[in-house]
Each structure stands twice: as structure tokens, then as C-alpha cells.
Image (cartoon, rainbow, N blue to C red; front, side, top):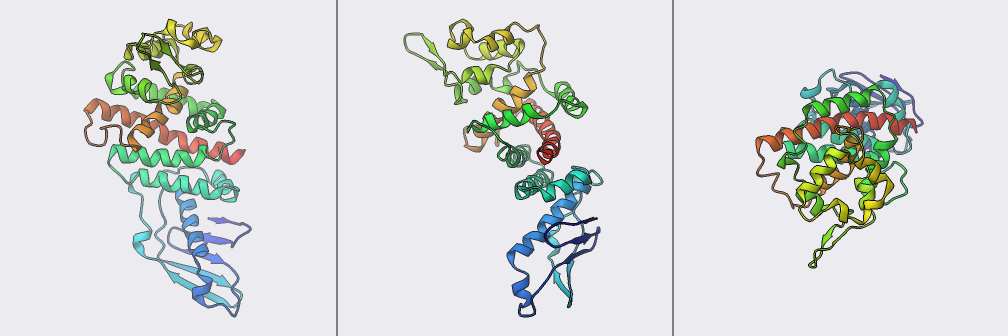
Length: 318
């Protein structure tokens, strides 16, 4: 693999990395191999991993310059092989080339590194956290008018063209996910804890909701909407101030089983809430997980892992 960039050309095989650079005659080797160049090596290895699905077994890096060659030996512990995805590229070489030349390449390469980490753990919750960190590297650099993270996620996912790749991810998710009415979804906690909804039950029996509730619930189809209502006893559709919102009303009138927008809702609002719930220690998930909860979390993680390469390609094309 050879990719020319404005910084140091390089050649990389499965076992050898050669970087062409310039070193002043007054510079010592320690001065030449500064943290920036060490980071450069890490970036190249992540780039290789993103294309091939494995880390190269490089032990020594050769720096070529007009006056000769400088060698630096790397610890083998810093070059792990990825056994769970051998011969499975994350993204193709064309996208990877654009990734490396991208203005925000540090964020994209961090995205790849978290994706790699997610494939090294057998713990379901750790995998989810690594995947979300990978996803975060993408949606935080995508233009969005709102400041809320869940809106950033929503904006990025909504912008991705619905081609065959995305449709296949949606179909697989639909086939693998557990019943939307299952307690494992914890809709009760979602409605109570997802801040943008700000749904409150007053002592006099009245119900109030923040206007942002219409944004959150606008992509909930009829079936899921009924589940959300049933999971929160005090949340009555007719009493919500968003009842007259035309977007919500149109969603409520959808035919039973329509779920074209459910995926977007789950992977923006719901998944962001789950991330906050588990990251901030509000959920017992990391310690106590039923088999059904494990099945749900795996389905969510599998779909998120499939989404990330699409997001990388989309962001690189912008």
C-alpha cells in the first residue's frame, strides 16, 4: 500500500513500514523521532487496519532520507492482530485514502481505533461504549445547527442516502431485534430519563412536555408510539401539548407496522439515552443483564458497528 500525502510518503506491507522524510544534519535521532512522528506511525497502522481488518505485524520502521536510513524498533505489544475480523476490511482503499487526506482525519482515525477496540472485547457493555465512542468521533464533526448530541446523531443519520447498504442494515436489525414491547427496552425509564422530552406529571394530574418532545417523537411510528404511551402510565397522547403538531399527527396516522422511521428514532434518541444511562451509572446493565437484555444489546451493537463504516464513507465524501 502506497499513499502519497503532503506529509512524509510511506510504503506499508504486512510486515514492513518505510517512511520517507527529511532530517536536518543538526538533528539527533531523538529529535527526529518526536511525538508527532510516533503519532504518524500509529495513524498509518490504523489506516492499514481500516482497509484490511488486521494490524500489520511491523516490528521495525525505516525512515528513509537523502543521507541514509534511520530505523526505529517498535514494541510488539503495540501492534496487536485483530483475530475477530481477519480479511474483513472496514472500508475500501479509496475511502481510506480520502480518510487520510481529510481535514479532520484525527477524528476519523480515532473513530477507527475505537472500532478496533470494540472488536477486542467480549463484554457486551464495553463493546457498546467503544462503538458509541467511535460513532461520537463522526457525528461531532458533522455540521449541525443544534448543540444537543442526540440532534447531531439524528442529523448525520438522516443525511445518509438510503442505498442498499443502509437498507440491509435496517432489515438485519428488524430481523434480529427483540419484540418492541419487551420490558428489556425499558421505555418507562426512557420517557422518565431522556431530558429532551422533559415530560412532567404534576400533582394536580396535568401533564406537560417540552416543545422538543415533538422532535424526539416525530420519528416514532404508530406501533412504537403506542408502546411508549403504555410504558408510561401518566403519559396520555391526548393530553400532550404536542398533540396538535402536524408531524406527530401524521406519524400517529401511519398504517400499523410502518417502521421506516423507527430505525432513525432508535439510533438517535433512544441509543443516545442508553449511552447516557449506562455511562453515568444510572443503569444496572453492566452488572445484571438477562439473556433478553443481552440479545437486545447485541442487536443494537451489531447494527451500530455496521453503520459506522457507512458514516465514515459519507463524512469523507462531504
